Length: 156
Image 1 (spheres, helix red, strand yellow):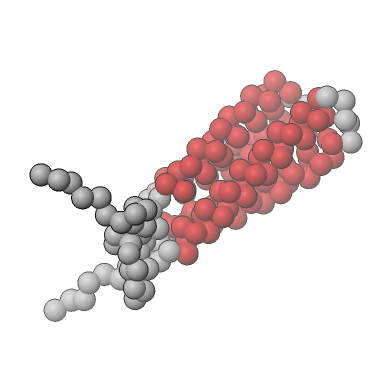
Image 2: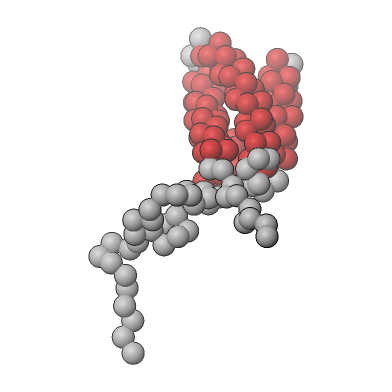
């Protein structure tokens, strides 16, 4: 008789949520720094460059996390390929910035921030596997808490 398969680990999805949230915050900071530079605060260009390098580092780390979501987390494949696309786009974005191709840089920046935010929403929509061995304490078994005020009764 074979034993039932072990539950998928929660930690890869938690790491994915952390990395997508970090990437989203850095991307929004990047937008503010670009706006500050365009508004005449030329010192913010150096911070814009540093944040770009940090974003590149976080994207590479997120690529490793997305691989962990897939295996051993037994999660979906989309975080891995979308993060790979983001990594390529970040490299192109940095190259366009250093090459002073402003039209490409701004357009790709808008697309990048949109992609990062869609990834953030997608990561937080993935349900966490139920913890094994913990009492459910009112949860419905799917990791959701009960409604305030108790269960809803339907009268016949």
